[in-house]
Length: 194
Image (cartoon, rainbow, N blue to C red; front, side, top):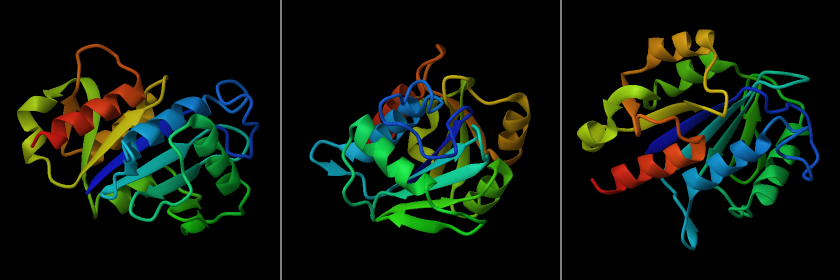
C-alpha cells in the first residue's frame, strides 16, 4: 500500500463553488490535482493507494477526507469532477468517525495529530521536504509509506513539528520546491521502478 496525506492550509470546510476552485474554495484546485495524480493511471485507478486530505480552511476546520483507491467509483481525473465529490462530502454532518460520502470517499472531523496517530499504525510516515534523503536512495526500501506533504503554502511550523514526531524518514524528490502534485507523480515514478 501507498498513502498520501496532503495538508490543505486554506482549503474550505464547507460546500464551495466549482467555478472558483482556485479562489473562494481556498486553492481546492491544488487538492484536486493532488488526488488525481495520486490515484489515476491511464485508463484506471491505482487500487493500492489511499489519499488523505486535511482541510484547514474556514469556516469549520479541521475536516479530513479519506479516498480509498480500491473502493472509488464515479471519479474522473479532472479537477471539476473531483471538486464535486469533495463538495458533496463537505455537505455531510461529521464527527470523529469516518462517514462514507460516495463509494471510496469518507469524511471525518480529525486534526493532524488524529490522522497521524491513526495512520502511523498502518503506514510508515515519510515526510517530503527539499532537504531530505534523495528518494532514489531509499525508494525500494520504503514499506507501506505514507507521504506527507503540504499545499502551495507547505506545512506550518507547528504542523511540521507534529509530522516530525511520527516520520520515520524525511525524503526529497528535488532540491527545488516543486508543486505538490508534481511531487506525487515523482514519488509514484520512483516507487514503480522498484
